[in-house]
Image 1 (tube, rainbow, N blue to C red):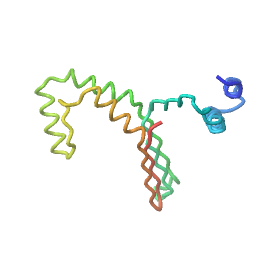
Image 2: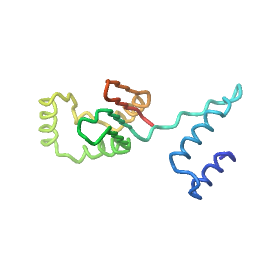
Image 3: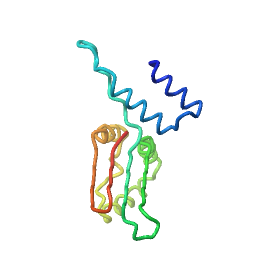
Length: 143
């Protein structure tokens, strides 16, 4: 850990800055670091831990003013869910698959394997969705 990062963490521990401020400072420090020297192995991209969905709405027709929704879903939850499907009896899986297909969700839970989830999570790492409307902004991304 470099000295600047350690100082930021110490300021956080001493309540001199908030967690959000510490995160912004550390992000800025990481952006300032020079690229790896030529011939050095590239630093591996960190594995995403969360799927984030952020909705900002400027519409204050509800009377409460603008609203903000910020959902952070742990990707570990997806991994655990896949493992749980192995505990579902085959008859129940058939019924669940039928209901999913009737609802327009073309997923076959009997074919869901842990390695498929890892592949999905790898692809989610590249996912960024921004939806701008006059009164709302929606963002979906991995972090």
